[in-house]
Amino acid sequence: MPALNGAAMIDATLASLNAANAAFDTDILVVDGGSTDDTIARAQAGGARTIATAPGRGGQLAAGAAAVAGDWLLFVHGDTRLEDDWVGAVGNFVRAPENVGRAGYFRLAFDDDVAAARRLERIVAWRARTFGLPYGDQGLLIARALYDSLGGYRSLVLMEDVDFVRRIGRRRLIALPATARTSAKRYRRGGYLRRSARNLFCLALYYLGVSPRLLRHLYG
Image (tube, rainbow, N blue to C red):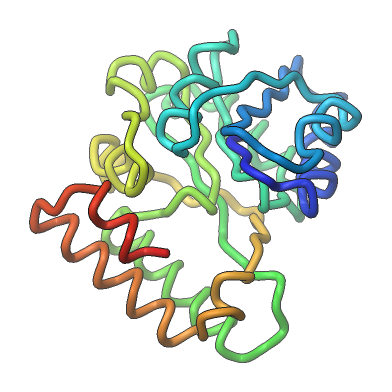
């Protein structure tokens, strides 16, 4: 789990992840990118190991993958909590032999009751299904062997999730029957329409070859 000043939400995220302790041999790792709040203390109190890296979600994800063992990796953002029977969904996925060559992602929901959030959730589901572009806030479940064969996450400051799922490919991405509920803070602050338009604009520029470092200033 990559984190940066995420103390406000990390307790709920870790509580959802700890639900898997009875079913799996888990190693929950929080990769902190230089928090100045009590993210690290809360992570450790919540049962997670912690390591520190330079800020940048791509580098944090790569460092986390390198620091854990096991045949399966589950990447979850620090402001996202897993819901429904996510443990059962993950168990069913990893037990199917054919899924060692696939990756799973969760259904996205926002922690906001407004109609705009529901519309955006439907758009996200369509985008992931049609174009094979689930973003990092939907989580990613992938076998270690497949992760390593694809080169893993790259140390990008933005678009690290798009970069990686494009290498996985749409046909190898499977929607899991469980929900990842993520923070709508950015959308509440910037407006759902305006924020969505900015995200789409940044994605288009990325596909046109603009550097993620330059896009980071536009993304906000």
